[in-house]
Image (cartoon, rainbow, N blue to C red; front, side):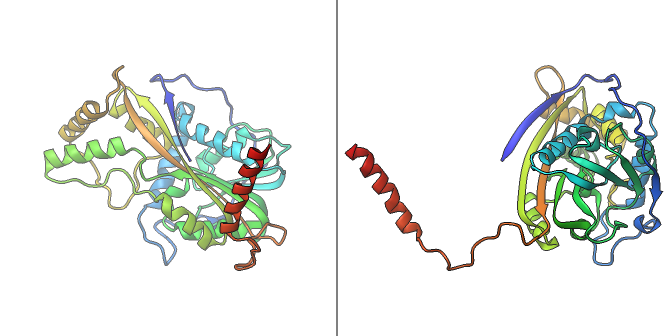
Length: 345
């Protein structure tokens, strides 16, 4: 299922309502934050996690940080909608890569009893949004969760897992900390995210500098998500995709918003800087190829949503292979019998 939704923005948006949330405590889990430059032994070291921590901390310290929350707030509300779709309450929940708490603000205490919010950026945790749910802030890396097995009834994650070096390990750890019959609901950027920006930069850099470097980080393909979730131990999987299109005055305003979100590229193979002429050419290409009728330019964010459950004996299971008593061929005869009965009437 795919839905395309447009968000129309006015540049220099006024700050939205909200105040820093009051947490029960800020708990620093020393075992949960990886040392600078570290990664799990089996992982491809694609992203500079220490740089990503600095980028998120810088974004959280900005005086008008709320004006950049529009995308993460929107996706957070959609994660919350999926939580409400499940007809049960969750006494203990965890948000992996919570940022400023974009999911908790959309949930209520009748659904979630207590919320642990974990992130690598301490300044984001100190500036979380207000929520009625009792919360505990934990300084921890998504790749090194400092929680015991079978701890949480619900784990959520919104727009964070696309920056981890070892996504299979992160999903396995989420599965590990879930209780049996617990559910994981997550969202991450998909492969078509910011394709307009990527194409414009590549064309401009090739024309001006004779080649191009990656300026938009690599993303996971939707076809891989189901396999990764199953490999981590989840069952009863659901994966779907949305596209959110945001319109900006120009390419430079888009790049400023990405920086304000803490979503600047942190891949190790990124190019340190682009020449001024190349940037101006990219902005011109962007406008020429994608400009809307009103003069704004669109940016597409593809979002993958995933739901997976930890196994429990009470869950419905498929019947054993070969145990069926009716074949699909006989089911076809049922339709013929029904149609004949209608004609006789």
